[in-house]
Length: 213
Image 1 (tube, helix red, strand yellow):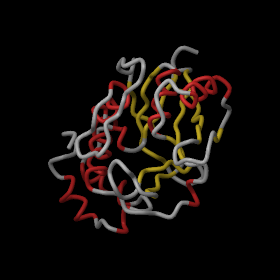
Image 2 (cartoon, helix red, strand yellow):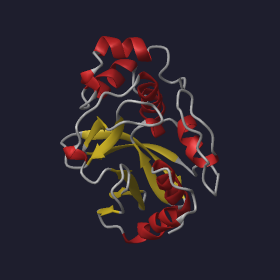
Image 3 (spheres, helix red, strand yellow):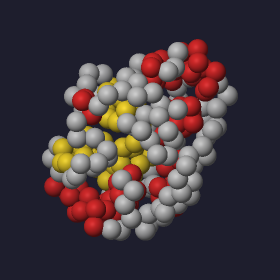
C-alpha cells in the first residue's frame, strides 16, 4: 500500500495550513512552528469528502487557544472533511506532529506500519489525537483520520477566531460552500455556540473564508 487518504476535518481542511505539517512552518495566527514530514511532497491528490459522524470542539489547543476539533464517529450526521492522498510515512509523520512528537520517531513509524491492518478503530495512546479511525475507501484506497478515543465524552469548549477562519477557508476550498452554509455548519458543532452567535461568526469570517486568514 503506497498511498492512503489522510482525512482532515479541522484547520487542516485548508491546504496552506496543512502544508505546515508536510513541509514545516507556522500557520498564520498559530503559535507553533511545525518541523514537517520527512517526505515534504505535496499530496498526490485532494478531495472533498463527507464522512458519517459529528464534529465537536473541546480541550485547550496550544496552537490556537480554545477548543480543538475532534471527530466523533458515534454522532449522527455528517462531517465535511478533505482527503489528502499521501504515503503511509507521511500520514505517520502528520499524526506524530499532531501529538507533538518528532516525525520519523517511534510513534510515527508505528502509525505508518499500522495502516495496512486497521479495520476500524485503533487507539495508540492516551493523547488527544492518538486514535486512528478507518473511514472506508475512496477510489479503492483506504481513508484514515485521527481523533480522541472517546470524543463523545469530551466537554465542549469554544474555539478561537483564527482556528475557525482556517476551517472556514478549508470548507470553501474543499466543498465550495457559501459563507452562510459554513456558518450554519460550524455553529451546529458542540462548543461553537458557547462563545459564538451566527452573527459573530459572520463578522469573524466574512472576507476571510477562502483567503487563508
